[in-house]
Length: 270
Image (cartoon, rainbow, N blue to C red; front, side):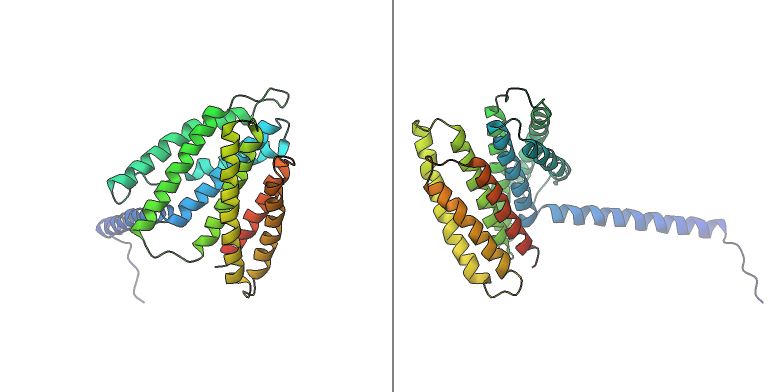
């Protein structure tokens, strides 16, 4: 029987070198894959959804500083965004994309610290002034929108199901406008302008919702949650029509969450 000889030092060195090269290549591949996955319109719109959910919960906390549910959701939103926005790539395909990424990543740490501080204040505290924070959040939301639009021009062929997430995002922005309006002086010119904008958003959402319902009504799995989202929307649409005589911000936010949940669950089916 042939005796197995121990590997020579040269063979061991060769093996270790090969493993090292393989490890470096795998890490580089993993990093490139992660970067590619993080810089797609779908990934960015998911960050927009999280960010707008955070904004809605901040408004709810401003309306009622004892709102424990809003406090918990703020911390959940922060945790998810803290792990996603800093991990966006630092550079894009061109200077404009890189600039949008740089601004997005620079804005987030300040927003995160301020929001975390506000969410951890005692419930008995007076709600702190949040206009500066909300302005910063609106700017970040705008940066993410511009980034997504830029990425969509770089990859013109998009998944048709992306319109489901766009509808969910439109619902969140509509809810956000409603809550912002509920906090303002209803007699001001700004409030009247905001109410007109809310009506425009509602009309746009309603038209898109009807198109989604027609598109997926015969789908074996997507049809039901789309119909459920449509039913929840009818409640919000009625609330908008009866505003400001019947302002119910907490209920609008609740039904908005339900619609967003139904729409995102439909998107996961594809």
